[in-house]
Amino acid sequence: MKRESTGYAAYRYFKNPPGAMLLLLFSLCQASVFAQVNKQQGSAGKQTIQIRHANSLSRDKSIAGGAERLTGSVVLEDDSVLMNCDSAWIYPDNSFLAFSRVHLTRRDTMELFGDSLHYNGNTKQAEMFGKITYKQKKMTLTTTHLIYDVSTSVVNYWDGGTLVDSANTLTSVLGDYKMRDKIACFKDRVKLVNSDYTVTCDTMNYSPPLQTSYFFGPTHIRSKANTMYCESGYYNSHTGISQFGSHASIAGKKGEKLCGDQIYYNKINDEGQALDNVSLKDSTDNITITGEYAHYNGSAKTILVTCKALMLQQYDKDTLHLHGDTLLGYHIALGDTGSGTARPPKLMLAFHHVKFYKKDLQGKCDSLSYDEKDSVMNMLYSPVLWADENQLTADTMILHMKNRQMNMMDMKNNAFIASRDTAATPGDTVQYNQIKGRNMKAFFANNKIQRVKVTGNAQTIYYVYSNNNKDMVGANRADCSNMMIFISDNKVKSITFLDKPDATLYPMKDVKAKDFLLKDFKWRASERPHCIQDIFR
Image (cartoon, rainbow, N blue to C red; front, side, top):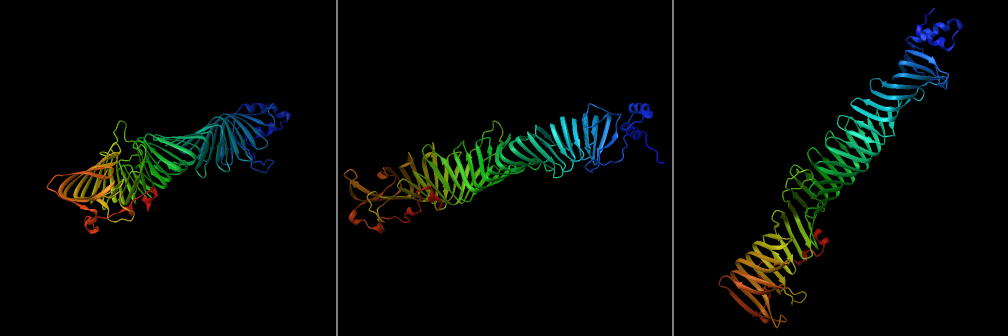
């Protein structure tokens, strides 16, 4: 006959004690009770909770549901779950309540600590209360009310919780952690903090093994270097790689802000790309660059924009719109350039098919550069500038700005200024005022040409009027090595010849087309932008 263990005998006789054994039962209950209980079947036909250890066992009539009370170093087990506590009430329906220093473990994959616990062996759910700590490898979760589903390995909380791993600290009101998928989901006042940045949003999924956060809804990411915003995307705190979508933006500390439908960014390299509806705004200099694609390089402090690339320079009452196949900006920093560090002046380059439009100034060339340091614009390769009625061309044109207005245009090699005479009839191909020379300097006041200095092979043709500019007298043609021409209201008022001139006034009856169009004259009015849309044509 098989002999029963002392602990099991005490447990069986406690349930139906015969009178002769009552004294023995009470004495055994004072000793350690090792409940090496055989597996029983509950009402649902599922495996029951096993009692592995307790210092004492008793039945308390004040406890509803026929519960039995275990005290002192209680150890309970159900399948893969092992629970330790100071005391517990175990119920016939395959559940128990645990109190004080509750410690639940599962196959060395996780640990759960709390003040009290309700565990249901049929549903495999553990509900923890009090000061709760959940540990799983290098991740720790703390909260005050938690449900752990053993079957699905999912942890839920809804009264606020804090998750900490090797890189981040994350807080939220609601959260659940799926152990099998190794993904945590958080909602309501979500905040993630690490040594480099802080993330605030409404909804976030977080993968502890990948150290990657996935954002949903309005999200702000703040660091010492910059501020980022998106309404969807992800960020890997280990690699520094992120993708932001839906109104995504990165704002620097010096006034620069990069926006796009999608932004890919590597924080470690300070390098990224932006796609669709791209814009870079510089609030300090009132400059905005837009396009469909941008590449930002923080180490070189450059940004390249292409596909409908457009630069807008805001002036007091007007805006300069400049388009090129590619725009390249230097000294553009979305990261921190250091406190107290003076930002170097920007340099903007435009490549191929460059056109720009401003109400009082339009231009065209193949390539262009603008240096913020000295407010100088260089126009290269077949440049042409239109200012009021004047057309200015040369091999190279350098426009000097002062107080955001044209100050001086330096025209090098094959310089030419032409304007259609105000008295010319529509369709007239002859009547143009012209100034030609090897080099020129055109001086402006209020964005209007006031005087022109011609150096080398200077030539001019202009139409002369009398009777207060009402009656045309003829056309004056002058040749001289160097000359200074004074202009008012788009008309030549006077010419100062710096060397011996050769000048002739021809009456209108003697003016012939072939004689009164200087060599290399070309009227390029058809190329002139008349509105913003024209710079894209």
